[in-house]
Image 1 (tube, helix red, strand yellow):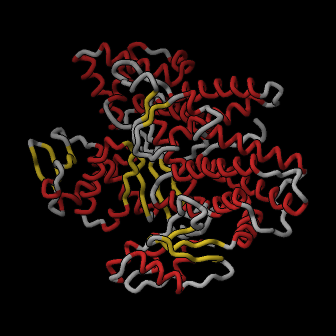
Image 2 (spheres, rainbow, N blue to C red):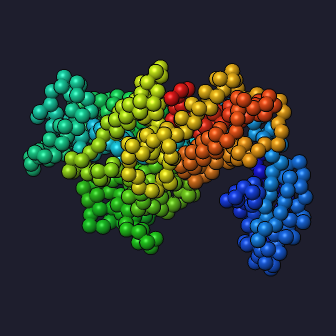
Image 3 (cartoon, rainbow, N blue to C red):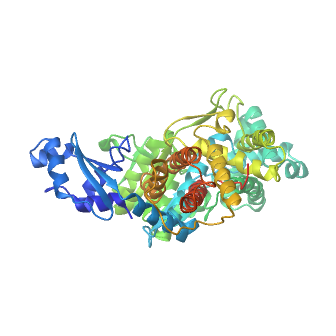
Length: 560
């Protein structure tokens, strides 16, 4: 049951919709006050009374029932207490029935959400700056699928531009096929770096000519390009596998080469294209933005041209409900510009395009600069985290079996969680010690809580939530029950706000509440009826934490 909606259906305020009342309901900071609270300050203008008088009046109009056990008015707040045993019975039964689907819904049934994330550059290794777009987009992909949407994961590859001419030039000058095959993407990147360090005017001209050959369909140039691309995808797919990241499309910039012409024709037909210093632009000054450059003076297309073509293709192909672009906040202007151009073209669905902006990631020794050579490869960060996790796990439990497998889940989970725990727009300073801590707001803490719950169930011989009857839950038990009940709502809110951090923070909060219950209440030695309830509660916590971490792409070891 959605208790906020239920409470909102009981409260009648003239001039205020049930949806508005539902949105206003919150959890009180002190559970002794109630389980839910409705602040009445916002009704003062409509009802022309003080919030205190409104709360007093509404308290008399809402009668306790089988769901609500108590209604009270305190200092302008309308507080509600839930029937504890009724809620516990309902929540535990629902988790037992739905299992790994608990928290899911069909709210998105019949709707498609396209998610553009990761968007790797061909012939360049993953650095830590790609972490946020990759795991944030992946979590949204999982969350939307969990809610019944058809999520389409798109890796908009950076596979277009003169850099590929530079690569071919560098390979022909200095490359060896066997050495490049052996060194993979890093060998390719070394060639690219060497070209940029040694390039003169003649080499730059040669690079432009090789790129022209790629575009014109030259066999040798395109075979080399496809080779560089396959080396890149072989490399990144191994990282994606470790991070539990998946895509439905790898259509990159080059895919839209033959789709830009119709876009340019349409812009011209609608009188939107203007010439500026030989270039073709869409004037956005009336909307408070610089012009959107569509074609350079030499006739070459730009990012905006390709992104407009891609948006139109995605709408025609997937008929999306929303199309999300998980890209760093530095690109805010770019997205505002091409979204506006689509709107001016008369695409009413332009309102369904969303830039999901995020902050930057750096290590504790400072931000990284590719020009200064301070690049930190993502594969190295993951591997270092896994190795550190192995050392920690080995120290805490040296006799544990499958320590390498456990360390992989712990280390990879720490990398993902470290990028997802905070609000997405916040810049992140990545700390190995912090993300691998068994205490605090980390995935390791949540995973360890899962191992603790699994251990309790194993000792009791329980493999699932089993329940016969429920007495009135105590305070620690009921805090856990309320947290369990909030999971479905949390998942929906994470999707609506494009914020997987809601799920990450929820997991930490539930783990904290369970651990307080674990230390304050006997489980295995409790009297039989209470024992069964507490075991069912433990099983429900384990299942829900696994579901929450799974939405983030994080696995859960059975033991730690």
